Image (cartoon, rainbow, N blue to C red; front, side, top):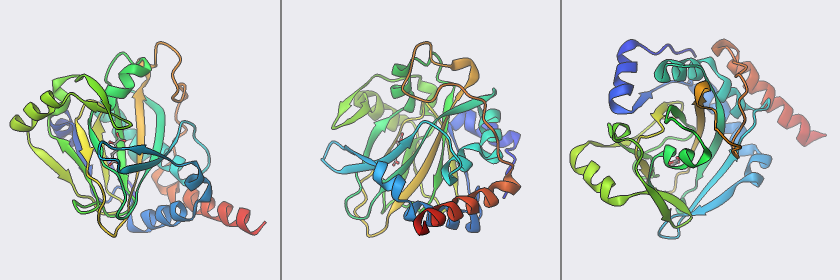
Length: 264
Ligand SMILES: O=C(O)CCC(=O)C(=O)O
């Protein structure tokens, strides 16, 4: 699968703060990603929980470094890196990536926030940062898909404080934004990619449905915005890109490696 972002899509991202790309990963590619993720004991054992304001459990696995695994292959994929560079207008590097494991019945909510509400404190001077969320499972309103406030990235950074274990945006500002701007539920089929700006206000509901909602989120910073002091995220390293035509081979190799480890 390959994807080239158009000028109209870039203009849409600049105005709305997000861009949804159905079929960014083909059904065959995303099936393989799902199969590997579900079988991946190492990833599961690294996961940790954050409580939402109602005590629901938001589980995730976050990695700062890239390897030869399928998640790193997504981070390095030309279709995402090229798109990010066109959307942000500069060379990007990998900040971190995370698998959001929103489990059936118990999956926790994420409060309204901007990612730059966190990354500002990681010594990034500019909000020239963005993420691509890849739907691994189908994401719907029922299983807690991402919600965004369209155009809210143009408000600039909003103050954030703690809600549960999470950092949430100032609710007075959020409520005012909701009065003036569209509230969009990003329902996504597996393989859909959602590119979103670091200042876009977003949240998601708890998952009370019987269906998991796993998503991989790949986060990038532009090279001119390297943190001005040490940060807990990945240091700058140029991205060794994977051609779109080579992605499936990289993913199959990860699957073969995992099976080799199990049988050895
Ligand atoms: O996975 C979700 O529902 C929300 C994740 C999120 O908001 C984030 O990682 O910044």
